Amino acid sequence: MTTPTFIQLSSFSDLEALQEKEAISQGLLQEQAVISPKYFYDNLGSRLFEAITALDEYYPTRTESQIFEAHGPEIFGQLPHDRPLIELGAGSCRKAERLLHWMRPSRFVGIEIAAEFLQEGLTRLSERFPEMPLVGLGYDFSRSLDIPLSLPELGTGPRDIFYPGSSIGNFDPDQALKLTQSMAALSQEGTLVIGVDTVKEIDTLEAAYDDALGVTAAFNLNVLNHINRVLMSDFATQDWRHTALFNEQESRIEMHLVAKRKTRVSWPGGERKFRENESILTEYSYKWLPEDFTELLKKAGFSEVEVWTDPHQWFAVYRAQVRNPA
Ligand SMILES: C[S@@+](CC[C@H](N)C(=O)[O-])C[C@H]1O[C@@H](n2cnc3c(N)ncnc32)[C@H](O)[C@@H]1O
Image (cartoon, rainbow, N blue to C red; front, top):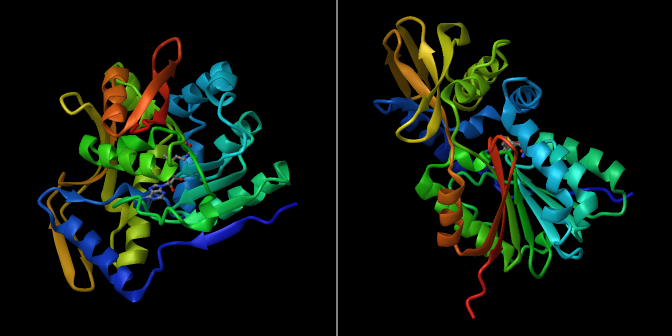
């Protein structure tokens, strides 16, 4: 059995840690306070996300899996078998685990901010696919996917990129274009398979981000615990409540934490007073019409875009090739 290789690409130098804290602090001091959704994924947050995917209301994971089950051989079976497969935000690697037998890549590379969680996933994957080289890269791609293309662990030649779960929805359209452009560069004329949520009835969308059991509320509130550890702030989770609303004009779910009462939060070098009902924006989740996302992929340098969807058109899986500038 091969042992997964793990590399932490962000160096977590003192300077980087300071810049991280400065960015969080600036976000909290904006008129509309914001916390980046990347802070959802500490160890507990990653587990709460896994629980969300099992909820009745959370249709994206279930629907994406239905598409893979119905069309997996068509989507993945035609990919050449000897290329590296890179999954962005690989998390528990459960999706790769179900799909790898169709793809047979030369190696599997998971890129993930929640490094420990990814390591657990890779260990499980190595039991299922003992012969396959497995690589984990601990990396935060929220600002850019600026990985040295010659990094030996990424493998050589064309690489296939897998970005499921509609995580691209956390990025606004301009950022999504930049991220898909970097995916095109990283793939070196390989293939991208990406899962993206679609626009649908508001009740269905809002229930998916505000379930009856309160699991998504716990996931959202837990971001404050993570911020307290990173920033040394004193958020009290009991002072906040979760909301999720669909902004039709912008075609996105917006998740907020709303102050239940007037509250003051402080951290070394800063503080913010929140009025009752003032909120912190914690996540955007953009929903895309297939024609608009196809257009975005073409702008990013992909061609031969193919789309698979479910009978309700609740989710879409796109496969695209990097256009050869011949
Ligand atoms: C919505 S979950 C999707 C997980 C899994 N790929 C799936 O489809 O179910 C997003 C994943 O991306 C990771 N992630 C979020 N922000 C990230 C960032 N800035 N850099 C790297 N990974 C990130 C999270 O830790 C999490 O595993």
